[in-house]
Length: 408
Ligand SMILES: CC(C)(COP(=O)(O)OP(=O)(O)OC[C@H]1O[C@@H](n2cnc3c(N)ncnc32)[C@H](O)[C@@H]1OP(=O)(O)O)[C@@H](O)C(=O)NCCC(=O)NCCS
Image (cartoon, rainbow, N blue to C red; front, side, top):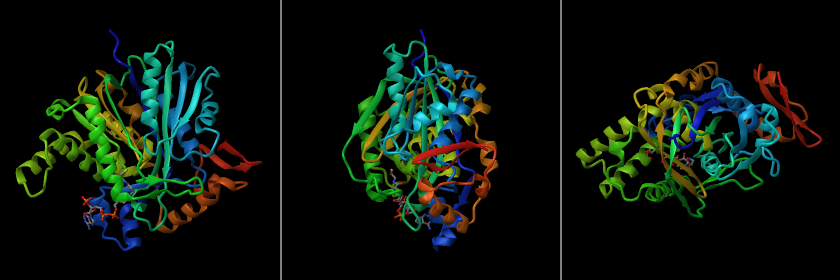
């Protein structure tokens, strides 16, 4: 019998520049411990005006197809999940369709639900395959986002940018998803939103943390019921990671659900149980999130890349949990199984070389980029080389209200 459908290929792409959190802390007069320990972040990726949701999505997708030897002609569905669309009408996905040279007989669309769009795309693709409509073809699901909260806001240290592309297929090499254990949750809340007139998100940050945890409770119950022994069976727990510390709060909630009550630092024994469980199941896979920052829809899948590049061999054929949360709010909790030979693909999915080639931005450069990005949608002509960019696909300005892309 074939494995359930799931993720067959996976790759990340992100901007060329980053900010060191210690530099931001000193510029904002904040104790660096707040960003490094309190939020768990080391760096955040910053996009220039020439790097947008389309260029990052196309780059990540090309890496996934090439790195895993997948012929673009095999793709029958293309979905881009994003909070950071480039047009109110035209989907990012259709630009990517052309840039990758995909077949015209391909269903192509964009999904939006804050940080949840890619999980929506992943489960829709699994349903597409399960229904028989795929006829042996594969789906390409891309998460691509630029997290923008604005200068001097509470959300500023939880920014970031990047894209994760996944190919979804029958008999996936990396991770199969159990269709009988996918749980969903929806509730209308105003915890984070971005009105049509704003490039920056509005967030009720502390409330959004509570909404996230309530959604985790609801989606997990829908997926696996009132289980008190799930964590003991799992090889890893992967979470939506707007900032690394959020994964600790989420893991605490899962353990509290299993133990039937709140855990507190004041009770040494149960707190040690929590920290041991977190160190075993969640903490080891948060390195990329700490290096890149919040990439909204892709952040859960960034943790999956980190897991696979480090532990695909030791966790081969083991089950892991995945939780995706999108403010507003919608969430999914599901159970996946790591492929038996997933470790063979470690090099194809590891973004270490890309990250090593990034440039550290001064806070002055970062602030200049943020301001320049505000004008980018209406700029006539943008020169990637003026941002130190070359050798890639870039957004180069808008002509007759049409976005222009060019390879330099
Ligand atoms: C996450 C967010 C709410 C934090 O807001 P804030 O009021 O600036 O920060 P806090 O005062 O809560 O401090 C954050 C953490 O750092 C800790 N901290 C503060 N100063 C510290 C220091 N010097 N050393 C170590 N830790 C420190 C706090 O105790 C807190 O930890 P806790 O959450 O475990 O209690 C804010 O960044 C935000 O709005 N982000 C965008 C929304 C978001 O990411 N939501 C997540 C759900 S989707």
